Image (cartoon, rainbow, N blue to C red; front, side):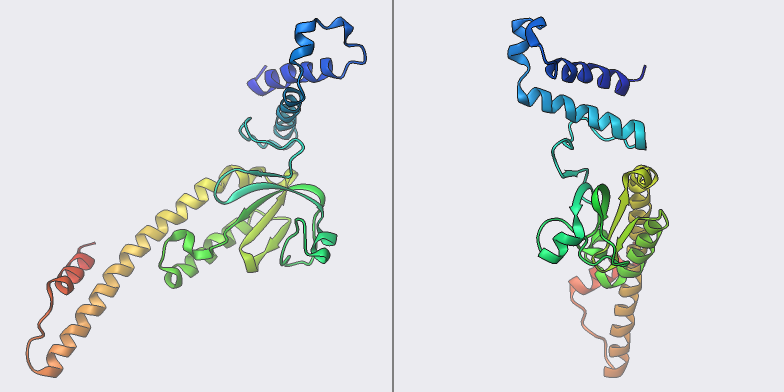
Length: 227
């Protein structure tokens, strides 16, 4: 019996006892301790185990999904419950996909959402140079076949029964592209330093006399070329 099965069995027993019609068989001490908060916590744990058993999604047991509609996993991942998203969009309130590529909206279901509100800035401040890499990264995420896409807002959505693979692989994919960006960033620094050196050399030739470089200019070029 694995840990999740033991957890489910334990908390299911609490729920079963709390829902008995006749509580007279339960000792007074137990009655006093079956608070609403405790029962809700038990149902939350059972629901988390259900996700694991049915969809293979293993989230921390401290996450709140029972009687909730949102659970944040990290900076980019969250689980969101959508009611009638199409109706909510028309009202301009509630939860809906802002610019669904297909025009479709979810209804009465949990979705895993991976979203990047700042786009290419997730890799640093060099936005223009990082945009092609971000597109490559985002396209790789889309290879995991999201059920809904919002390209305009760099946001992807998966139904629970379709989310296990991307949920398990996301961190490795992100790390791969962050490492790739770091390598490209250093190459860009070298390129820009060389361009600056060429510019100053050309100025030198045009003026017919040595250009007086400041110490900061010299350091900037030297550091760039050594990276």
